[in-house]
Figure 1 (cartoon, helix red, strand yellow):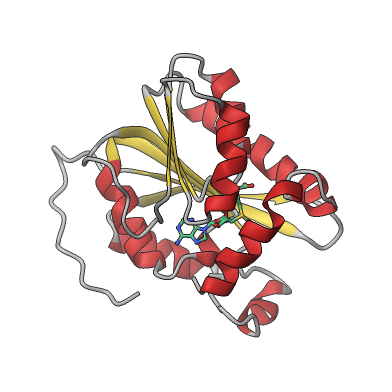
Figure 2: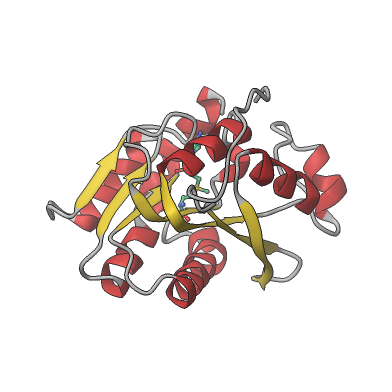
Length: 218
Ligand SMILES: C[S@@+](CC[C@H](N)C(=O)[O-])C[C@H]1O[C@@H](n2cnc3c(N)ncnc32)[C@H](O)[C@@H]1O
């Protein structure tokens, strides 16, 4: 991610949830993510949101899972400031200024890791997946939403400056390389031609899986 991306999120932080994109595009994706989480994780003890932005998804999880510990990381301090104001000083909330590629948490800490519309900003998607695999508890789940390069986005994504919108097979390959299995791929239609896609991936059962070390460049 370039500094320009971070600056842009910091500049937009106060209106991020209430502008047209926030209301019409981001909000329905966040709500769908929580619905999917509820269908696969009954009572996670700890949840991590990678690229948590203004904390909208964690706020939804707070109501969905009133006992769960809620953690979030984001490299944009302006977005985190809004998230802190939203989520308050609850001892079960832990928000940190960090990125996907270096998660400041112990191995196997979370039953549920989510990330919504952040993945295409990561400087190294492979490193991010490796970190998510590391912090997921055995049998835990990872839910990812992103505007993946599907349909018309296949060509559109390639001309974007950061060019990190992946096809389904690219994301599946990266997940597998990090030790994560793709379980579900689901389309969520939002506004007109805009679409986002869910990937639900499970952490491997460490008792039955031997993982090879990864050395792919970001
Ligand atoms: C489009 S916003 C999505 C925010 C939130 N997840 C939501 O659904 O509203 C993308 C977020 O990803 C964050 N981000 C960018 N690069 C990141 C990285 N390498 N690791 C984690 N988060 C990152 C940005 O700072 C920004 O807050």
